[in-house]
Image (cartoon, rainbow, N blue to C red; front, top):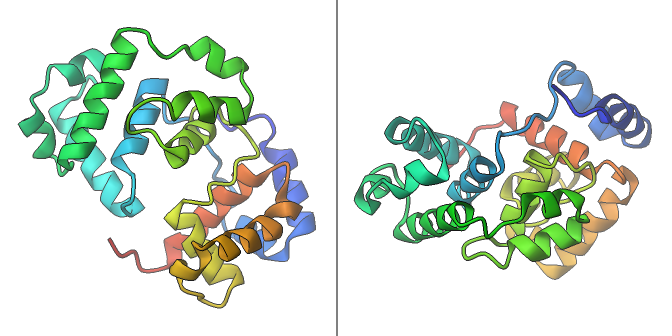
Length: 212
């Protein structure tokens, strides 16, 4: 089920940004949906760190084959070699195992996260090993369904902005401080629906060749 704010956000973005209006028109039926429970959301975000969406989906699919009843307890029962066989780096395996231990020992207060502001959620989650700002932002978008997150470190978002707004400007330039400032300024008109704008910009990449 789509977030309750989705129709209102779509209307606002169509009115304020002609590029997004075109993208939204091409995807009239889709919407952001939750990736499931908090552990799954964070684990999937760790899997997707610094790789393409296509590659992340492939690795995640292999993880689910090896661990079909995916939860913290079942992950901790898997050997590191089994997880590495799914295409995970040694470091990502360590991060996933540490995350699973946090959930098993109830070190992450999910009720508190739900009550926290976006910045507070990022601060609390990045205290966990392997969770950086991007991973915390994915949790805000895909688990808490927060409407106004702009993940400036997301390669997919940068690629979409380059293609749709910056005439194919190299991602490396958009990743600089000056590039991030330009994106932040561009996205001011999307507030308070920057998560929604990001979701549609991700969709715009579906018509482009995907490279790993």
